[in-house]
Length: 157
Ligand code: ADP
Ligand code: MG
Image 1 (cartoon, rainbow, N blue to C red):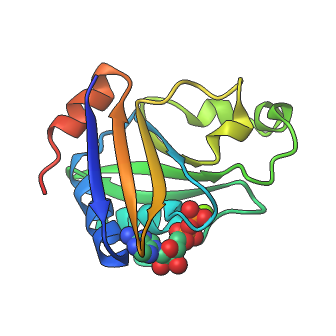
Image 2: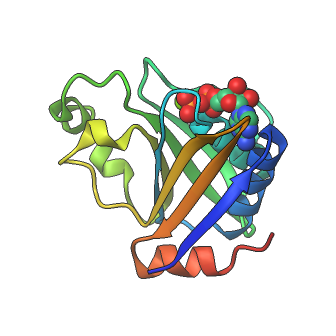
């Protein structure tokens, strides 16, 4: 499966990657964002949503755990659901909230702290790992399904 490694020297580079991802996403994808606090998971998601045309504020749904956004991907309205599971106390909470139903062919699900949803979270199509690297960040993007692979193959920098 496909892997990409990039160095993101500053926040603008993170924003450009978010915009590049917004060009290639398709409904039905689940993207999991790994990385410590401050690694840039929310910054990447925010850039992606803004590049997809969302004009409001994007902050991490730390307390609500999930926040939906209606955006356009390739001329089609798609619901992007941004999850932040950091404060989730147990995987049962994920099931009880009905979050599993949000993972379907009509949505793009972007999940911060997917580890907290283990083992009830559906498997991701794309795994993103952000790490601190000097003043910037390193990022690894890995496709874990055919759909994720097709998406990353279309990335243009
Ligand atoms: P997380 O959601 O992973 O906890 P945030 O996105 O909330 O992290 O915060 C990331 C912080 O790092 C922000 O202050 C942002 O400005 C900064 N940042 C994002 N990308 C980079 C980068 N490539 N280089 C340096 N700083 C970055
Ligand atoms: Mg965050």
